Amino acid sequence: MRTFSVFAATITAAFTCYTLAIPTIVHPGDGDDLLTTSRNTINETISTKESADAGRLFTATSEQLKISVYNNFNSGSVKVYVTGLDSNGNIVLLTPNGTWYRPPESSNAMGPQKITEDIAIPIGAYGTATPVTIPTHVSSGRVWVADGDLSFFTEVVGTGILSLVQPSAVDPDDPSAAANWGFVELTTDFSGITVNLSYVDFVGLPLGIEIQGSEGTQTTPGVAKNALSSICNALAAQSSLDGQPWNELCMTDNRGNVLRVISPHNYIALYPTAFDSYWTNYISQAWSTYEDTPLTVDTQTSAGLVNCTVSSGILTCVGDNRGYPQPVASDIFGCNSGPFQIDASDNAIHQAIVPRLCGAFNRSTLLLRGGNVQPRLGSTHYYTISPTNYYSKFVHQHESLDTGYAFPYDDVTPDDEPNASGLLSDPNPTLLTITIGGPTA
Figure: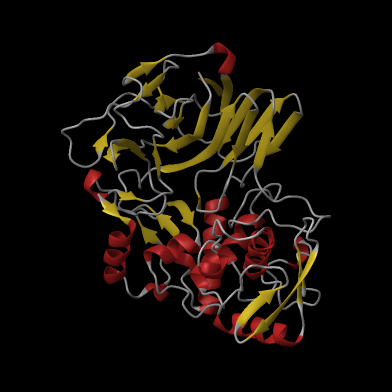
């Protein structure tokens, strides 16, 4: 097993010529090749010494969620996996017979242990719908859909806390790397359901979601059937124009079949010098512009409009508890580091400005006419100049309804623009439908 920092150092040393812009070829490993980060692990909220016994757990009819998985993907090897935390904070995985399985702690085991219980739920043939029932409320839940097999592992961390190590979309050595997969995130409790389709980290097997419930029918259809190849073609063309490693965001098997496209933020985590100078001139121009002209941020809260100006290299906003030094590429693509890291002590103005400022960078609207007020320009102005977040641009171009996050603050919009997130919720859901392989119409 490797931590992210060790993995990044290893892969950076091995591949220094990232500007060649060839797709990344996956080569699946085993448990020793696992990359563990906060993005592909969930931890039980209580010590394994205090939690429920391992094995099959109970169901509660009043908490059940009905799911229909519709196969619009022409493959006979599609499987579903369901993972999450139950209401007691225990790690649970759904079995084909509809009961939760809680993996045991192995006190004598060293390192990650592969789950060998049958947790793969087979999906019917192309054009058919398969019913799946989640037996009780679940948090931090994911419904994984894979053309092929996925591997899950457990590991005891800290003071006896059981951790579930899930497939990593980023690691080309992950045991599940050769499978074409994606997932839907969900949480269910007595207040209803929240389900999300997001491309912040990667785009994989095309999925769509629909909720039926007391608030009617809500839909996020996701990316189109052939989105992966189209996005990769666009990224390759962009690489040839600007020399940046956009094409390497695409991960393929050894036959050249595209499996997924990872975000530039995740790519930089693997190759820390990637996109190093990509934003440099744009950042300098923005900081120079707002030395003389105020940047007005509409907090869309009770604080209203807040003016910001640059002085001595720091963007300072009225009423904000701290200023903003110039970001670097990883800060912009990830929106959670450098000047865009939000601390618990930050005030409400700071917490409102970070998403709007980072969104303006990703969409490249800060230097456009009218860009001195953020967010004010509509989506027709996004990604219209270079540099910009081309991953986000091309993902949105291939979304059926332009809904689904492509960077962390993709839900920041002017008041008169629709929300671009793929999140749906309902207080009384009756059916969640997951469509595999792109929209049916």
